[in-house]
Amino acid sequence: MFIGLFSVRIVLNALGEEDYGIYNVIGGVVTMLAFLNNSLSSATQRFLSFELGKGNKKELHSIFSNSMTLYIGICVILLVLAEILGLWFVNNKLVIPNERIVAANWIYQFSIISFLCTILSSPFNAVIIAREKMGVYAYVSIAESLLKLALIYSILVLGGDKLIIYGFFMMLVSVLVFVFYMFYCLMKFEETKYRYVFDKNKIREIGSFAGWGIWGALSNIFKGQGINILLNIFFGPMVNASRGIAYQVEGAVNTLVQNFYTAMRPQLIKSYAANETEEMFKLLNISTRLGYYMMFLVSLIFLYKTPLIFSIWLEKIPQYSITFTRLALISQLFIVLANPLMTAIHATGKVAKYQFLSGCIFMLVLPFSYFILKWDYNSFWPFIVLIVSSLLYWILTIERCYKLINLSLRNYFVMVFRLFLVSLILLLGAQLLYRWGTDGWLDFIVLCFYTLVVGIMAILFIDCSKSERIMIKELILSKFHK
Image (tube, rainbow, N blue to C red; front, top):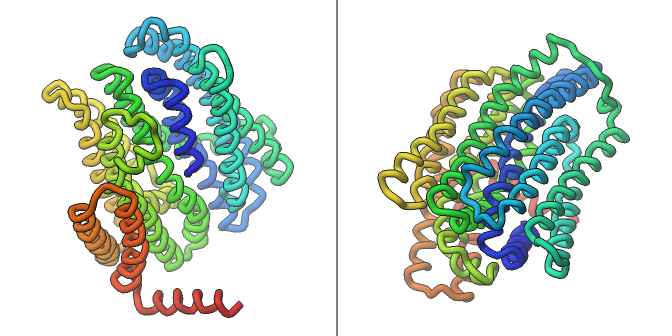
């Protein structure tokens, strides 16, 4: 996380605000495609984990090969669309200075190659997650971040167009990561040795699940990159730079939570497949609470100390980046609450209605934002619409879980009430510290100490049950007695 945030400072200084904004609006497609990769990977992983949970390992190779055949077909279709419609849009609709059009086209082509690597890596990622080899992700993430940092530093000393060089380096990293995952899986897992298979029933089953996942992913791309394009059309690349900074922070903070959810997801699906209902609800409860607290505690510090953090992090702070960051983090809190429930819905395989409705919610973000910007020319409005859409998405996810897995609404809302009560206590204390203090280092240290100590105490005595407190106490004591 910290390497990624530090890299942004170097990139912004090397490229300048305008070129950084151009890369964000065009190369940001790759970042948005992470949603697509996650959906495709989740589809394959759901079937793999389900079969592993049932103890049926013979089906693994068939699932992997059919998935790969399906995703190769998807790549061909999307590549054609990208080179026809996408290329036209970049050259005719985006607000890009004339002298940077050539560089923008290079960035677009690099982004397409990265996109192909992202899609084709989905089945390999799914196998790693289903097999619960989470350590591989940790090592690859560290290596990827360090490689990006080294390449970014090299931009400072290389001649030529720095925007094109940066785009090429980011594409190179995507290719290397894909190649590593492919060879790792080929060496470790027998089922990943691909052979052309076209089982109509299997592809229809995986494709149906993945299709609704793709619809959901496209709606996320629509609301994310769509809003980015909308901001570009209304306000130009400088505002894209501000949004890019905001989502670098949101993405870095969210990575902590998503890595935790990635580890929990296969266990939850396997418990559903094995009809271990009590275990499934226990995992839902734990993952929701821990994921929310991880996101909230870090976000709390950013909400109150964004100017100080940005002044240390960035030499030049883009105009709207502080407010954009705060709004993006608030929006993500509702998504974090919905994610464990979404995994439970995926475990059932009955995703059509859920994906359709959630996709519609996020698809409407763009037109609503457009009409509001026409009415009131203020770049903050799309972020307000995003917060409302995230809240509606969370409510929809609760309703679907109630219908599909018989989620106890009483137990769930009691848990949520405790989460919000802890959050309110911490917010009130942080507000008092903010009003009485100054925006300096001492106040930052005090806020971090307050968030950690008071946060842990509030969680233990308000949210945790007596049995959970005893278990935590025994766990701590056992560590000291070793």
